[in-house]
Length: 175
Image 1 (cartoon, rainbow, N blue to C red):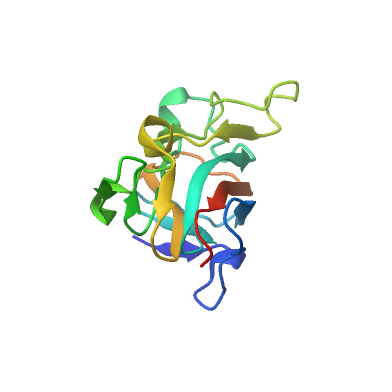
Image 2 (cartoon, helix red, strand yellow):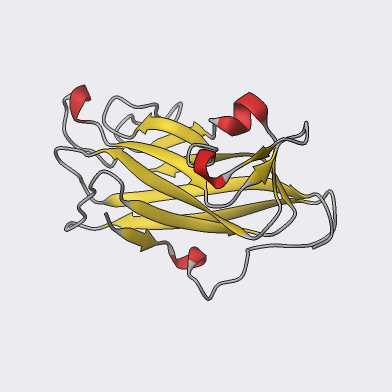
């Protein structure tokens, strides 16, 4: 199991934005899959940082078709999570053990996954975030945290390309 880090999510990087309450921000991270990229089940890509006090309200996953195999059963499948506990609007704390699918659960990135409307289907992906965010959100981050991608199932033929994670949030309090 390997952990990779997008440029904007490095250990020495600060959160992309912090500021006044009720201001909408977008944290984002980009990861480039190279020709030698090997994804194993459990591999993690840390994509972007969220500041303490961020109230996650939406976002999307965009990028290239990563799995170039034409068989649907060969799809690269991922989860999108947050690496710290979050608080739901009803005051319930969701522990870190349950936030690994907070923003997306078992998403396929292969050739028959959702594509950008009006664009060549081979050109890329644009999928709204889901998981716990949609079922119980918004999600309040009580500490600085990272949004990350975990590999669920590996692809038979991983291709090169770009993967972007965009996370929209309000500052629920001045941090």
